Length: 267
Image (cartoon, rainbow, N blue to C red; front, side, top):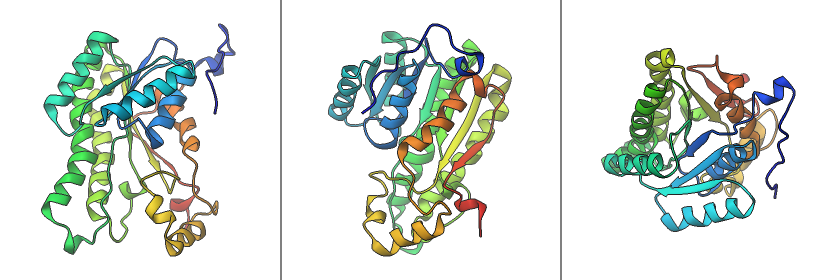
């Protein structure tokens, strides 16, 4: 496991653009999986990171892990789908730690069921977590960013932001909406020096995709369909993330960057 990087006081100009010293980053849904990997990557380049999730014990354990690795890490547990909890959580961060410079909306769920069999409750649960949650969190954080006239926001989108697939209709609707929400926020907030972008992972090795990997037929499909002939490793998302949240990405706005081993590039 990689520990804290030793960042010299001076770096070549190109590299210095990726250092996040003095920046505070909130990553939702980050006490495990992709969220924790992304939070650790931000910490490795100097950011103060705030971990989040609904499970307060899980958040505390993840914070303890990062702190023991030498990182400046904190935790605030709240449910991104509940407006009052989001407001309290953001206020707590502002009071205890300071303003949020970077927001990564990673919290999400998946429910695999054919559309014709999807109960309304399941539809609403998926859309509320994957689309309304990012809206609620970003609206509150974005207001502070507008006042300070700077900020970086990254939504974790999906290949389902671009194309459909059987059995994940609610997820596709939510992630498609998240792509357009990214563009809408860019349209309204770019003039305040706020960059709003998205990352669309392909098939990555995560807890969310474990049922798919354990299905021999689907696993074979992914390895055949992906030009790289493999699943992605979570660490392979961090380069794009660091570009989007650092000064190196100051003129990138309203984009959703696909990291998929080439799936959407081929027929």
